[in-house]
Length: 268
Image (cartoon, rainbow, N blue to C red; front, top):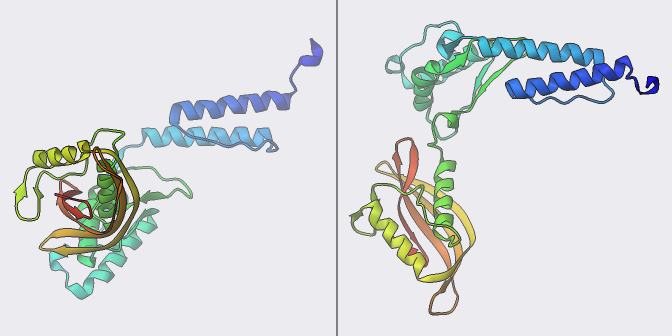
Protein backbone atom coordinates (compact mmCIF):
# COMPACT_ATOMS: atom_id res chain seq x y z
CA UNK A 1 0.00 0.00 0.00
CA UNK A 2 1.12 3.57 -0.75
CA UNK A 3 1.16 4.59 2.92
CA UNK A 4 3.80 1.88 3.68
CA UNK A 5 6.30 3.09 1.07
CA UNK A 6 9.71 4.02 2.51
CA UNK A 7 11.02 7.54 2.12
CA UNK A 8 14.40 8.06 0.40
CA UNK A 9 15.91 8.87 3.79
CA UNK A 10 14.58 5.63 5.30
CA UNK A 11 15.87 3.63 2.33
CA UNK A 12 19.30 5.24 2.74
CA UNK A 13 19.39 4.36 6.46
CA UNK A 14 18.55 0.72 5.69
CA UNK A 15 21.25 0.64 3.00
CA UNK A 16 23.73 2.06 5.52
CA UNK A 17 22.84 -0.63 8.03
CA UNK A 18 23.53 -3.28 5.38
CA UNK A 19 26.87 -1.65 4.52
CA UNK A 20 27.84 -1.60 8.20
CA UNK A 21 26.85 -5.27 8.57
CA UNK A 22 28.91 -6.18 5.52
CA UNK A 23 31.94 -4.39 7.02
CA UNK A 24 31.55 -6.34 10.25
CA UNK A 25 31.15 -9.72 8.52
CA UNK A 26 33.91 -9.16 5.96
CA UNK A 27 36.54 -7.27 7.94
CA UNK A 28 35.45 -7.51 11.58
CA UNK A 29 35.00 -3.74 11.65
CA UNK A 30 32.57 -2.53 14.31
CA UNK A 31 30.83 0.74 13.50
CA UNK A 32 28.51 3.08 15.39
CA UNK A 33 26.01 5.18 13.47
CA UNK A 34 24.24 8.02 15.22
CA UNK A 35 20.52 8.10 14.60
CA UNK A 36 20.53 11.80 13.77
CA UNK A 37 23.53 11.70 11.39
CA UNK A 38 22.74 12.63 7.76
CA UNK A 39 22.37 9.24 5.99
CA UNK A 40 24.03 10.43 2.77
CA UNK A 41 27.15 11.48 4.71
CA UNK A 42 27.19 8.16 6.58
CA UNK A 43 26.92 6.32 3.25
CA UNK A 44 30.02 8.09 1.91
CA UNK A 45 31.88 7.43 5.15
CA UNK A 46 31.03 3.70 5.04
CA UNK A 47 32.23 3.53 1.44
CA UNK A 48 35.53 5.13 2.48
CA UNK A 49 35.91 2.64 5.34
CA UNK A 50 35.29 -0.24 2.92
CA UNK A 51 37.89 1.09 0.48
CA UNK A 52 40.42 1.50 3.29
CA UNK A 53 39.80 -2.02 4.62
CA UNK A 54 40.19 -3.53 1.15
CA UNK A 55 43.47 -1.66 0.61
CA UNK A 56 44.73 -2.73 4.04
CA UNK A 57 43.86 -6.40 3.55
CA UNK A 58 45.54 -6.53 0.14
CA UNK A 59 48.64 -4.54 1.15
CA UNK A 60 51.95 -6.47 1.27
CA UNK A 61 53.82 -7.24 4.46
CA UNK A 62 57.22 -5.68 5.14
CA UNK A 63 59.49 -5.42 8.16
CA UNK A 64 59.29 -2.38 10.43
CA UNK A 65 62.81 -1.56 9.26
CA UNK A 66 61.65 -1.45 5.63
CA UNK A 67 58.48 0.44 6.57
CA UNK A 68 60.46 3.33 8.08
CA UNK A 69 62.83 3.59 5.11
CA UNK A 70 65.76 1.32 6.09
CA UNK A 71 67.72 3.96 8.05
CA UNK A 72 71.30 3.49 9.18
CA UNK A 73 71.28 1.95 12.65
CA UNK A 74 74.43 1.54 14.69
CA UNK A 75 75.07 -1.95 16.08
CA UNK A 76 74.77 -2.24 19.85
CA UNK A 77 78.38 -3.37 20.27
CA UNK A 78 79.62 -0.12 18.71
CA UNK A 79 77.79 2.11 21.19
CA UNK A 80 79.20 3.34 24.47
CA UNK A 81 76.87 3.30 27.47
CA UNK A 82 76.54 7.08 27.49
CA UNK A 83 75.42 7.01 23.82
CA UNK A 84 72.53 4.62 24.29
CA UNK A 85 69.80 7.07 25.29
CA UNK A 86 70.49 9.35 22.32
CA UNK A 87 70.52 6.32 20.01
CA UNK A 88 67.19 5.15 21.42
CA UNK A 89 65.71 8.65 21.05
CA UNK A 90 66.77 8.71 17.39
CA UNK A 91 65.12 5.37 16.61
CA UNK A 92 61.92 6.31 18.43
CA UNK A 93 61.78 9.55 16.44
CA UNK A 94 62.24 7.67 13.16
CA UNK A 95 59.40 5.35 14.12
CA UNK A 96 57.10 8.19 15.15
CA UNK A 97 57.72 10.01 11.87
CA UNK A 98 56.18 6.97 10.16
CA UNK A 99 53.37 6.78 12.75
CA UNK A 100 54.78 3.67 14.46
CA UNK A 101 54.57 3.67 18.26
CA UNK A 102 56.12 1.15 20.66
CA UNK A 103 56.16 1.45 24.45
CA UNK A 104 59.25 1.24 26.65
CA UNK A 105 58.91 -1.04 29.70
CA UNK A 106 60.41 0.23 32.94
CA UNK A 107 62.22 -2.99 33.79
CA UNK A 108 64.41 -2.95 30.65
CA UNK A 109 67.83 -1.31 30.77
CA UNK A 110 68.79 1.09 27.95
CA UNK A 111 71.01 -1.63 26.51
CA UNK A 112 68.21 -4.19 26.67
CA UNK A 113 65.70 -1.83 25.06
CA UNK A 114 68.09 -0.84 22.27
CA UNK A 115 68.77 -4.50 21.57
CA UNK A 116 65.02 -5.18 21.41
CA UNK A 117 64.39 -2.26 19.04
CA UNK A 118 67.26 -2.94 16.65
CA UNK A 119 67.53 -6.73 16.68
CA UNK A 120 63.91 -7.75 17.10
CA UNK A 121 61.31 -5.03 16.60
CA UNK A 122 62.90 -3.84 13.34
CA UNK A 123 62.40 -7.35 11.94
CA UNK A 124 58.75 -7.53 12.96
CA UNK A 125 56.28 -7.85 10.08
CA UNK A 126 53.90 -4.94 9.47
CA UNK A 127 51.26 -4.18 6.83
CA UNK A 128 52.73 -1.78 4.28
CA UNK A 129 49.82 0.64 4.21
CA UNK A 130 49.38 4.19 5.44
CA UNK A 131 46.48 6.61 5.58
CA UNK A 132 46.04 10.12 7.01
CA UNK A 133 45.85 9.85 10.79
CA UNK A 134 46.62 6.13 10.79
CA UNK A 135 48.87 4.96 13.64
CA UNK A 136 50.54 1.60 14.18
CA UNK A 137 50.56 0.77 17.91
CA UNK A 138 52.66 -2.03 19.43
CA UNK A 139 53.21 -3.16 23.02
CA UNK A 140 56.47 -4.66 24.23
CA UNK A 141 54.61 -7.40 26.10
CA UNK A 142 53.25 -8.66 22.77
CA UNK A 143 56.83 -9.81 22.14
CA UNK A 144 58.06 -10.74 25.64
CA UNK A 145 56.43 -11.64 28.94
CA UNK A 146 59.50 -10.84 31.00
CA UNK A 147 58.13 -7.92 33.04
CA UNK A 148 57.51 -8.08 36.80
CA UNK A 149 53.76 -8.01 36.20
CA UNK A 150 53.97 -11.45 34.56
CA UNK A 151 55.93 -12.86 37.50
CA UNK A 152 53.15 -11.75 39.87
CA UNK A 153 50.42 -12.92 37.50
CA UNK A 154 51.88 -16.40 37.03
CA UNK A 155 52.40 -16.96 40.75
CA UNK A 156 48.86 -15.79 41.49
CA UNK A 157 47.39 -18.06 38.81
CA UNK A 158 49.46 -21.01 40.03
CA UNK A 159 48.21 -20.58 43.59
CA UNK A 160 44.59 -20.14 42.50
CA UNK A 161 44.93 -23.31 40.43
CA UNK A 162 46.33 -25.15 43.45
CA UNK A 163 43.64 -23.93 45.86
CA UNK A 164 40.65 -24.45 43.56
CA UNK A 165 39.14 -27.88 44.24
CA UNK A 166 36.31 -27.28 41.79
CA UNK A 167 38.60 -28.16 38.87
CA UNK A 168 41.62 -30.35 38.23
CA UNK A 169 45.04 -28.97 39.07
CA UNK A 170 46.77 -28.32 35.71
CA UNK A 171 49.97 -26.62 36.82
CA UNK A 172 50.00 -24.37 33.74
CA UNK A 173 52.83 -22.19 35.05
CA UNK A 174 54.74 -25.02 36.68
CA UNK A 175 58.34 -25.37 35.49
CA UNK A 176 60.03 -28.51 34.22
CA UNK A 177 62.91 -27.63 36.56
CA UNK A 178 61.57 -27.52 40.12
CA UNK A 179 63.16 -27.48 43.56
CA UNK A 180 62.09 -28.15 47.12
CA UNK A 181 63.98 -26.69 50.08
CA UNK A 182 67.09 -28.76 49.32
CA UNK A 183 67.02 -30.66 46.04
CA UNK A 184 66.02 -30.51 42.40
CA UNK A 185 62.77 -32.40 41.74
CA UNK A 186 60.84 -33.23 38.61
CA UNK A 187 57.66 -31.55 37.48
CA UNK A 188 55.87 -34.91 37.73
CA UNK A 189 56.86 -35.21 41.39
CA UNK A 190 55.58 -31.71 42.12
CA UNK A 191 52.28 -32.49 40.37
CA UNK A 192 51.97 -35.60 42.56
CA UNK A 193 52.70 -33.62 45.73
CA UNK A 194 50.18 -30.94 44.81
CA UNK A 195 47.43 -33.41 43.99
CA UNK A 196 48.13 -35.40 47.17
CA UNK A 197 47.84 -32.17 49.16
CA UNK A 198 44.53 -31.34 47.47
CA UNK A 199 43.17 -34.87 48.06
CA UNK A 200 43.65 -34.45 51.83
CA UNK A 201 41.16 -31.57 51.95
CA UNK A 202 37.45 -31.25 51.36
CA UNK A 203 37.72 -27.47 50.99
CA UNK A 204 40.45 -24.97 50.09
CA UNK A 205 39.58 -21.31 50.00
CA UNK A 206 41.92 -18.47 48.92
CA UNK A 207 41.25 -15.27 50.89
CA UNK A 208 43.95 -12.76 49.91
CA UNK A 209 47.12 -12.46 47.84
CA UNK A 210 49.43 -9.44 47.84
CA UNK A 211 52.74 -9.37 45.91
CA UNK A 212 55.37 -7.54 47.95
CA UNK A 213 58.64 -7.47 46.02
CA UNK A 214 60.64 -9.19 43.30
CA UNK A 215 64.33 -9.95 43.76
CA UNK A 216 66.85 -11.53 41.43
CA UNK A 217 69.75 -13.78 42.39
CA UNK A 218 72.02 -15.53 39.88
CA UNK A 219 69.44 -15.09 37.12
CA UNK A 220 66.58 -16.57 39.16
CA UNK A 221 63.60 -14.48 40.27
CA UNK A 222 62.07 -14.61 43.73
CA UNK A 223 58.63 -13.17 44.41
CA UNK A 224 57.84 -12.33 48.04
CA UNK A 225 54.12 -12.15 48.76
CA UNK A 226 51.54 -12.03 51.51
CA UNK A 227 48.81 -14.65 51.45
CA UNK A 228 45.80 -15.81 53.44
CA UNK A 229 43.81 -18.98 52.77
CA UNK A 230 41.59 -21.47 54.58
CA UNK A 231 41.82 -25.26 54.51
CA UNK A 232 39.33 -27.83 55.75
CA UNK A 233 40.99 -31.28 56.02
CA UNK A 234 38.99 -34.45 55.35
CA UNK A 235 39.37 -35.29 59.03
CA UNK A 236 39.69 -32.10 60.97
CA UNK A 237 38.47 -28.58 61.52
CA UNK A 238 38.92 -25.55 59.33
CA UNK A 239 42.34 -23.92 59.54
CA UNK A 240 43.44 -20.45 58.49
CA UNK A 241 46.90 -19.94 57.04
CA UNK A 242 48.32 -16.47 56.61
CA UNK A 243 51.69 -14.77 56.41
CA UNK A 244 54.54 -14.23 53.99
CA UNK A 245 55.47 -16.61 51.21
CA UNK A 246 58.21 -16.86 48.60
CA UNK A 247 58.13 -18.27 45.09
CA UNK A 248 61.12 -19.10 42.91
CA UNK A 249 60.68 -18.58 39.15
CA UNK A 250 62.84 -19.28 36.11
CA UNK A 251 62.76 -17.82 32.59
CA UNK A 252 61.92 -20.70 30.25
CA UNK A 253 60.83 -20.54 26.60
CA UNK A 254 59.71 -16.93 26.86
CA UNK A 255 57.70 -17.24 30.11
CA UNK A 256 58.30 -17.01 33.86
CA UNK A 257 57.67 -20.49 35.27
CA UNK A 258 57.15 -21.48 38.92
CA UNK A 259 60.03 -23.62 40.23
CA UNK A 260 59.29 -23.64 43.96
CA UNK A 261 56.84 -22.33 46.55
CA UNK A 262 57.09 -21.92 50.30
CA UNK A 263 54.14 -20.34 52.08
CA UNK A 264 52.18 -20.82 55.32
CA UNK A 265 50.49 -24.24 55.14
CA UNK A 266 52.12 -25.48 51.92
CA UNK A 267 55.52 -25.89 50.30
CA UNK A 268 57.33 -27.84 47.64
